[in-house]
Length: 345
Image (cartoon, rainbow, N blue to C red; front, side, top):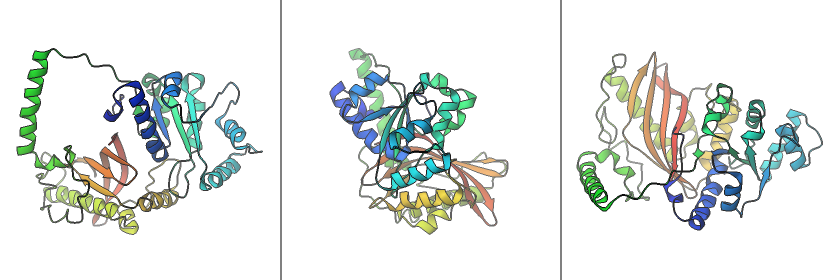
């Protein structure tokens, strides 16, 4: 996951960027729950003037639990009761947008954010947190659990200097040559070109996949501990996993995961599966397409990485996905799933 992240669609004038940023956050924060930002609170407040944020001030409420009790008018600071009340509150369709300035918090206070992440019946996060924190602070070992839970970082981009005409001409020529090369030689990545057909169906993806390849990509080489047939089996399994996800087939989709797997540290495997069912069934439709899949052996496990495009009526992104698989009986099962980079489309 790179330290600098800003959707390309957010670039432009302040007014235009403000509207786009607000639209993006309205879509992204319900899905992710928490996003890191290096923008100042004042600048972000100006850009997101239509969103009503509440600020957690540790100088007034030393714990995040006390802050939530005040905002939600809860009468007890018992952790279990707060969790129960938050779930009921979120399931009733309530939402709270929160700003947190890491400069005002200790590491322990920041880690407390992970304790309260209620989701509603649709699998959306009800607490939507913008965390103002530098990347340097995020590198602390003590904050690793928090950083692992933040899938996206929203950072200010350094303006690009305008290129001289001659430099621009050479750049344009290089881009044209590269584009021709991509079109002629890398058909497997055509899913990521701008003219991607959003109506494309993935039902016949297996028919387009030959043994040992995915979307025209040959079997991975240089894997001394992984037989070519095993690499092909892993790729085929990922294609089937994508099909189940796209078809919103709950039982088939969940069968690809190890029974002890949970995609969120604050959830048990059973809780995660119930949460995932809501996320899977909430969209009217889901379309997913994957690019070339790389596979490598890791001491009895297999790591597969690839870019995927996810599309639904209300949210679309391009994600660098990494799966860790472990053999169980005669098949591979997913034991870890990581989104290394997410780019909203």
